[in-house]
Structures are given as C-alpha cells and as structure tokens.
Image (cartoon, rainbow, N blue to C red; front, side):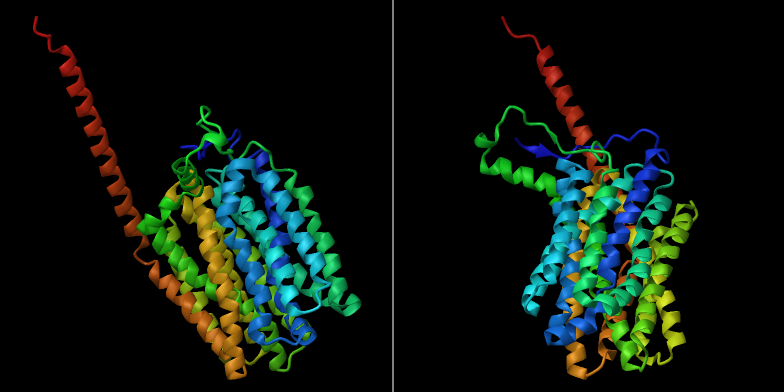
Length: 453
C-alpha cells in the first residue's frame, strides 16, 4: 500500500509537560550514550594510530564515518519514524550500534575496523539520533527550545563522562576491553527507548487502501518515495541556505574533537590533559544547551541572529588554535567551542521548525542530517591529510575555523529569505483558491442555464 506523510500532526495531550518530561529524559540519556561514544573517538585515536599502523587520514576515517553515518541516515530514520514510530526505530538502532562496537574489537586490520566500528556503528547511531530530537518537538510547543536543549545536553555530558572514562578503561583493560565495557553501557539505551510511546510522533498513515503492494505502478512507488522523504525541500531557498551553512559547519565540526588530544600531546601535555579538553567541551556543551534553551524561548530573541553570532565566534576561535600553546588557553578555547556546538545542535531542530513547520520536521530534520552526515564524513580525512602533509595539526584548525566562520556569514540573509518564501507561498495559495472559486462559479452558472426545448 502507498504510505503518505500526514498533512498536519495532531498535538499530543498535555503539551509542555506530563509524559513529555519522561520522553525528554529518555532522549537526554540516548544522546548521552550516542555522542559519548562519537565525541570521544579522539581519545582512542592515538591508540588506533599505533595499533593498526595507518596514516592520519585513514585512521580519522573511523571518526568521520561513525559520526557521518549517524547523520547521513537522517532521511531513512525520519521515514522509519513516520512508518514504525520512534520506539522501534531507536531500539533497532541501539542493537545494531552495539553489535558493531563489540565486533570491531576483533578487527585484524584498519579496513575491518572501519567497516565494523565506523559503518555498522554509524548506521546504528543514525537510527537513534533523529528520533531522539524529533520526538521531543511533538511533546512541547511553548517550551520546545528548553526541552530540546535539555535533551541535547546529554551529548555534552556524554563527552564529559566518556572521555576520562575511556582513558581509565584503556589503562586498566586495553582498548579492546574498554570497548567491550562501553558496548555494554550503550546497550542500556534499549531501556530508555522503551519509554517512547509508540503512538507519537505520528506514524505514516495509509491513504490508498484500494491498492495492494502487488498492484502498485512505478509511478505510484516514485510518488510514495517522494512523499516519504519529502525531497521537495531541496527546492526551498531557505532550506538550501541553512543546509549549506550546516554543511560547512559539519565539515569542521569534529576536527577539534579528533585533533585536540593529539595536539595537546605534541605540545608536551599528558593523555589525561588531552582527554580533559574533550571533557571541558562536553560540559560546556551541556551548559550551553540549557542556557540557550532558556534564551531562545524568550520572544525578544532572534534565533537566526543567535545562530550566526555563535558560529562566527566559534569559527574564529578555532582558526587561531595553532597560536594557543598553553594548557590554560586550550581549556578556554574548549569552553568557547563547547558553547558554540551546544547552541548549534540545539538550534538545528528549532530553526527547522521555523523554516518548514512542525508538520515537516521529521523529514526536514532527517534530510538536514543527511547533508550534515556527508560533510562529517569528508571533514576528518581532509584534516588528516593536512596533518600528514604539514607534519602538524595547524592546517586542520585553519581549515575547520575558516569553514565554521563562513557558515555563520552565509546565514545573515536567512531571515529575509524565509519571510519572502512564506509570502510567495501565501500568494500562490490565494491564487489557487481564487482559481478554484472561479471554476466552481462557472460550473454553477452552466448548470443553471436552461436547456432549449
């Protein structure tokens, strides 16, 4: 049968409270687990570089693929949520990710490690990430930004906890033993996913009951695919502009996570100090999510302007990292960068609702995550190639900082484009209504003309 996305989601009972806070906590914990693993790959990076003997560029594929696929699967996750609900999709994702992490510890070489840890783990996390953000928006309206901020701050706390935990586990049990324990921790995500009610957000409803799967034509299947993935958004100027900005941010997003611990060691600092930098990013990410959740909910705050400012500041701070030679200065940078990424992650779903509306959030956010995923896969290997070419990590930080700054500048006219696009849609809707009314009047007039005897 041909599934279609509902035209407009029905609000859930007890908006801005009730079971919504249980869902928010569950999303918080799932973000804690997913990003706790993804953000701290940089702690394992020197170990993998030595153990497998690969180049910087190839070893960084581990980070870029697991992080990239966790976003790249966005459209698939969004369509799956519409069809099967958040709970089922999240549980399947946790199981797949845990399987990939566990099996990766038996990898005989870097290629197999990339397949199991990067690809399988990334596919699993990709099915988890989108539902954790989307479901919160369907339970909140007035407090949507705050609830989303609380849910996404699990990412920061995950980075804060998993970074020193990974160092400790490596020292006690080796990297394989550390990964086995982390796999067991990630499996607990199934418990938190079970708190997602199966009826929200809305599943895709069947509106073509007269047709069976066997009788669908190629055209029917193409229409079904287009409605499920909502590819029409690619024709929206506002969506294109914002997704381009997110693409640029995401190319450079994970470079500090991967390179900061290695840079700290090159400057004579310990592995523990390098891990502490990631922890600082994580805790500031957490504080930023909650803080900006309160700020963005204020009616006087312009979400788009806030997004632009934090990206430019974070990008400039990243660009000048090669000039930071003291541990205290690197800690200060970690504060700035962690604050930036916390606000950026929070604003993704908030701005998507503002650009395309709540009724298209699942598909729009999924499509945006796919674009972010493509960028994330490309970013770290490029940084690794720059490190191999120049013999240090300076070029990687120049590259990341420049792109993030440019991403903030690109979105300066976004507000005007959104307004123009909505006005254009309103005019088209009125024109269509007028044409329909005129056609109905003509039909009525024709029916009233008496036939000659």
